Amino acid sequence: MKKLINKSCNAKQFAAFIVYLFVCAVLAKLMLKGFGDSPHMREIVGGGVFLAFLCASRNTFWCISFPLALLSSIYAPIAYIYGQPDFQSLISALSTNLSETNDFLSDIPFRAYKRSLEIILSIFIVYFLAIKFNIKPWRNKTFVVSSVIVLACIVGLTSFFSNLLHGVVATKEEMAALEKFAKKSSWGESKFNGKFQNYVLIVGESARKDYFSAYGYPIDTTPFMSNAPGLLVDGLIAGDSYTVGSLRLMLTHADTKMWSPRYDLNVIDLAKSAGLKTIWLSNQGFIGEHDTPISSIGYRADEHRFPVAGEYHKNGLSDFFLLERFQSILSTEREQPILIVLHTIGSHPDACKKTLDVPNKFIASDEKYKYLTCYINTILKTDVFVERVFNLLKKNEIENGRKFSMIYFADHGQAHYYNSNKVSLNNNSTSALHYEIPLIKIDSYSFDRKINKSRKYGVRFVDGLANWMGIENKNISAYDLFDGVNDEYDYGYRKILAEKKPIDDPAIDLRPYLTKKIDGADLFFGKFLWLKIMKT
Image: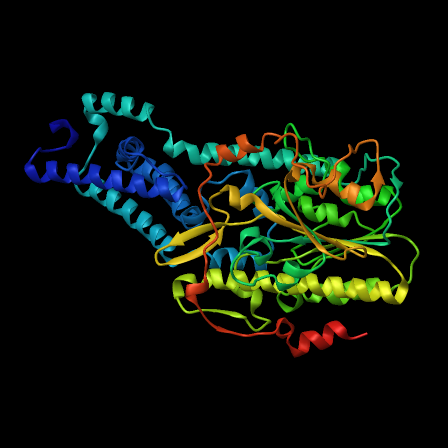
């Protein structure tokens, strides 16, 4: 060990070297966590050895160690909640507008940024010790040999870049497929046998069904859907745990073996091939014609509306503003059957910002459950939105004789996230309940309420939508979302979910943690919104 110190081997220098190795190990742990890893002791020790060599040289410190530490500190707040980068995070980043970015950043707790500071401070402490005490680990052959053996056993420091590389490759392949099929339809000719003139597909956002009173939640979060005449399906499984990953499968005729989308076989082109007029009204971000898989599908519609920059904060934040355009579409005289897709912002994080335009019926008495209380308020707001869509369709049926059928479903749920003394929801972890989403159908011939407990998988969703619209196509096999029969196969779902380390994550009963309540769902509109929506 004497050779580890350049000039002398006194007790002070030896102690400095021990401290140096210890701080290197601490730094390694911080950096590994900053990259989204959950390091084992082996990885911490190996990472510490790795840094001990790199930080002892001025050149390797500034060219390798410090850039790695800086990258780790930058990514650390994101890793605190969302883990290592992968296809999901990269494709979601490409699908995110400025407002959603703000929501994303606001969901990160302050303590996550503290970790970034700790990484930067630690890297400079290590460098100071190396310079101050002239520490040169490579001068001891025994230490070098043992270090090589240790380094050969670690993967933690490289897993971040490995995952990032795989994510980049997968994202590149996805966008290439999107570009290839963005302007192509492979449906061919379809036959329309539908018995309705107005078909409305409401796409919810981040809505777990176990927070719906319609599915048994003990707080009345869905008074309309809990009592409306129609068919409720208990057992629909989302395509994935995040918006793009789920909807790219649920809105295209997906490959059930590979769980991969077919953008040239999407629901919009299917409806168009059968002679339906298609309209896509979105309250989610849009940058360019084919910037994301979902906006690309929406852009295929005969008419489409996305919130533009600046409008998102003004109008797009509230799903209620979609109703004005929706009402205008219904009032237009036409004989052609029509498919209208309403892509809502729903319960997307930050949930508390999604109800700023309406009085909140549920108020938290415990700060720990404030976010969850905001979340159930967004569920109630969604219920009001669905009710308003139904009322407008019913009004149009009376005035114009156009029969209707409407479906509401969500792209995915969320998982609980425990941070200090607060509980929130995000997509960081997964569970079976994270994937279980609501599905309800209401039409002109719905006179009573029915619940079907049947397992249905999102990877067959477009087949089910074809049946719902009465469309026959050579690419579609017979499949009914509402027949009450479990899917014969799970299409690899159990294996896919098992690989994501599912956790037990039931809905939390918030009744003990609520205080003041505001009765009357119509209050959710507010005077301004009510007048604006009802204006003709």
